Amino acid sequence: MTRIRVVVILAVVFGLLAAVAIYRYLAQYDKMIREKKIAEQPVVVAIKDLQFGTVLDETNVEAVGWPVQIVPAGASTSPQDVYGRVVKSPVVAGEAVLETKLVPIGMNRGLAILVPEGMRAMTVPVNTWSGVAGFVLPETKVDVVVTIRPELQREQVGKVILQNLTVLAVDQKIEDTEGKPLKSTAVTLLVTPSEAEKLALSATEGEISLILRNPADSDSAGTKGTTIAQMLSKSEPVQRLAPVRVSRPRPARTTSTAEVKPAAKPAEKKTIGVEVIRGSKRTQEKFEDKTQPK
Image (cartoon, rainbow, N blue to C red):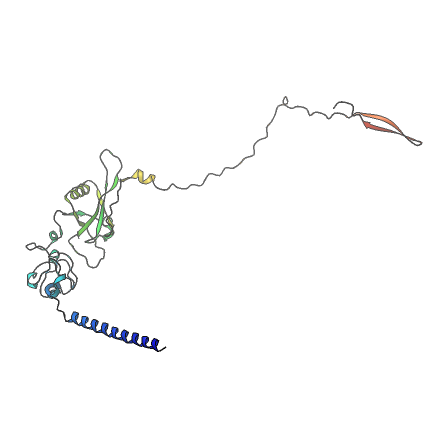
C-alpha cells in the first residue's frame, strides 16, 4: 500500500509540473505574437459607398494601413493620386479603390466609359409591352425576340435572336438605385459587332421585344422559331361532348307466306285395349302401344 501511495503522489506532482510548464510556454508565445510588429503599407479605401460616376475627393476616400502581405494589386497608396478620377464600378465602404474600378485617365464621364474593349453600345426602340412593362433597368440581363415575316412566306415568325445581353442604359439613365419600373422609349444594350448587325436588321425589318432574365442565369436556350400554324397546332384541342345516340326500336321482320311452314302436329299415340278380370269384376284397360315406331 505504501508503494502505491508513493506512485500516485509522484504521478500527481509530475502532472502538475507539466501543466505549469505548458501554461508558461503558451503565455510567453502569445506575448511574442502580440508584441510582434506587422509591416503595413498605406492603401486608399472608400470612406462610404461609391456609385457609378462618383468623382473621388477628400470627402469619399482616405489612406489606411494595410498589411503588406495582403495589399491587392492595383491599389493606390496616396489619396492625391486618385483625386478627380471617376468611379465606373460600385465600391463599398472600406474597400480598396483599385485601378480597375476607375475610369481610365483622360476619358470623360458618360456612357462610353461603360463599354468594354471589343464591345459596342446600341440603342433600340421599345414600348411599354416590348420593354417588359418598364422593369428593364440598367445592369439587368435580357433576351431579344424578333417578330418578322420572311420573304416568300405568308405568316410571321417569332424567333429569339440574341440572349443574355446587358442593359447599359434606359433612355438617358445609366443607373437606377431604387429598382422601380422606368417608362422608356429606348434601351441601350451591350453587344458585339455581329450582334449589332442582327439587332439593327431586326429593328428595321420586324418588331423586337425584350425578355427579362435572371442575371445569374447565363445558359442559352436553343429555339427554332415559331409560326402561327405551329403555335396553334401545339395548343390543346377543344373538348367537345360526344353526340347522344338515341336507340330506336327496330321494326319486326316480315316474312312471306311462302316462307311460313306449318307447325308439325304431334304424333297420335296408339293404345291397346286389354280386358282385366279382378275376381268377379271385369274392366277394360288401355295401354300405350310401344311396339310402333316413333
